[in-house]
Length: 484
Image (cartoon, rainbow, N blue to C red; front, side, top):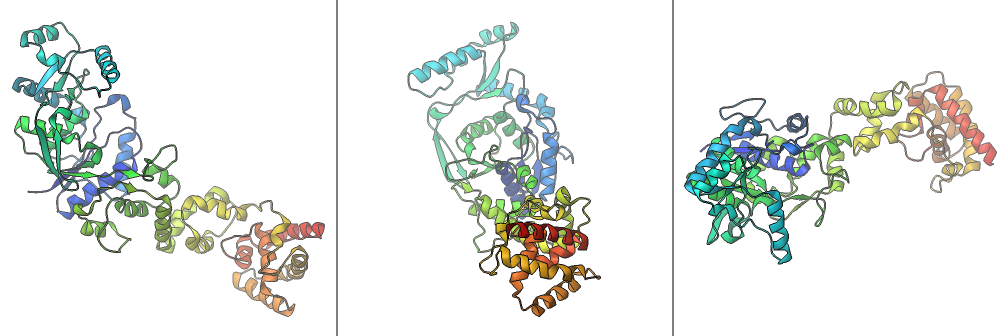
């Protein structure tokens, strides 16, 4: 049997990290078993449909290195792969269930259902549809249909006994049938519900392994009853725990940590996100933490998926991302960081390749970069207190003397190269009998306006150029003279 898994997202916006991990595990399982990975767009809920969301799904999966074997844009033998384009398929199957007694027409209005729901709550009960319309005769049903009354088709779930199935992660699962509700299969608009369409589509598309979130554990008995009613083979189930922010909170759109696009916009690398996301709820059984996609495929085992929720720790992701950035080839880092440099340094004449060399080991996420290098474009306002550094044994008075000594030295350099600047400045410090820090620290403050910088005073001076370095140095001297 060839393994066939599917990822079936709804086009309702950006791709949630929980959904992305479901796609990832489905992809890894299919590739591990030389099977097929199918993309299906489940757009039966037209009220929540978002224009352009399907393209976001395509772009996200491809960006993450997950290419599908069959899908809306690549075709396949079991299409169409967009549910709304399969609309005419579902009603005949629902009617087949009505004929066999496994489903029935329901004509109850929303108002009637709401009234019964409130009555159940008043009794302290959980509302479940009471099979009211199941008791209509065939003639009564036909009369209502002929009269054009709005209807839905509901599943006729058993009320006695139990329904059991096996899940590859959670083991044997058993649910009492009296806990099952008569879920709607076909809505008033003629569209199938997600619950019905996914059963029909999974069967028609030959899906062998259904991989989805554990929130569907309790719904699976109802799906299995549909499979049994049709006489179809039930697929294998692999339910996955949710991706959580912590033990008690889901990932939140408000906090900007729910969607893949949130993290890309913040400057995280796709490879780092996928590597870390794979480990949120699954472990390889070894100490290995860094995986290429091929290595994940080789290591993946569904029996090592955890039952407990996976905690998505942004700090751990940031650590992963920093490690991935450090491992980038320098030319790739430069290519990736350039748009972030441009946000604050475009047109400033800063030598990006050298700046990139200084920044690569200091970059955790790319969105931090503009703030870290903005001083090169414009000297920020700063306090003279920065000139005080106990370890460097410097204060505003010492800084003033040091800068007055080094200014003419810098002005006298004709070959403004990093090597010449370094050798000339260090020689001048030695000749003056000063400590390196007593000069280099004030120089760094004067030309950068901040205590923490990529590179030291020498590198910054070269990046700024001679004219700008001297201009900033004069600004610092003016401040120090006024203070002293």
